[in-house]
Every structure is written in C-alpha cells, then in structure tokens.
Image (cartoon, rainbow, N blue to C red; front, side):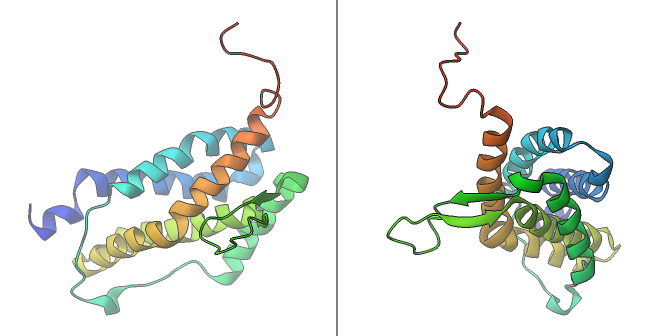
Length: 180
C-alpha cells in the first residue's frame, strides 16, 4: 500500500466519520438531556478510541499545510455548555498513571474539559481532512494520530470511567446481579 492509499484507507475514512459525528453531536448537545448525552458518549467514545488505534502512519511532506481551526472562544462555548449540562457530575477524581504522582493521590478532572479537548482535536482533524488538498489530508492524519497518543486517547479512557459510574452507579457496589 502506498502513501496515497493510506490517506483514503478504510481506517482513516471510518475515523473521519465517527469523529465528525461526535463533533456534530457535541455542537448540538444543548438540545439533549444530560442522560441522553451520557448514553451517547458511552457508546461513541469506545468506538472513537478503537478507530484512533487503527490510524495508519502517514509521513508529512509539507508540515506548513497543518492548520488548527477551533478558536479559544469556540472551545470555551462548548466547555461552558457541557459544564452546565453535567452540573455537579462534571468534576471527578482519578489517579492518573501519567501524572508522576507516586503517592497515589487523587487528581481532580472535569468531564466537560476532557470532552471539549477531544472535540477540539476531532474538529480540527475533520476540517483539515475535508480540504481537497493532499498535503492537508496528510497533516490531518499525522496530527490526529499523534494527538490520539498524547492527548485525546487518554482523555477518552479517563472520561469513560466517570461516565460509566454516572450511568451505572446503582449497580456498582450493590448486590444487583446480571445473573439473577
């Protein structure tokens, strides 16, 4: 498979599709109830993570073609909307294995911040990949793969634990059993 094939490979097209759907949903999340948002995220985030692991390596010939699109104001608007939706359930505690916090103290995180960071990386990828330029697509794929490893992949994993807890807390630590 040559480099050009990687740009239009099924893993790239599938990642583009799922990240685009995530962005569309997040942009309209104010129209949904909190529970519906959490149910959607509980289904789409694992798919996004899986698709992120399958992105092929792409060498960039023209790094100057890389662009970022989401502004600080757009990021803040999405963050504020999500924070208002999640209210008291926005903040959660997590021992981050990457924080070098060897005494195992809990760090404080925001679900809204994690989801907005994921949105920013996703939206930047979708917009750059949508340009009808080979160099733009190379950069989009290269950047989203790097950001998956350093940024949004980890945020998905961390957020899913909190989302799972919110959705299924009545089962956690109880004697409710799936085998009844």
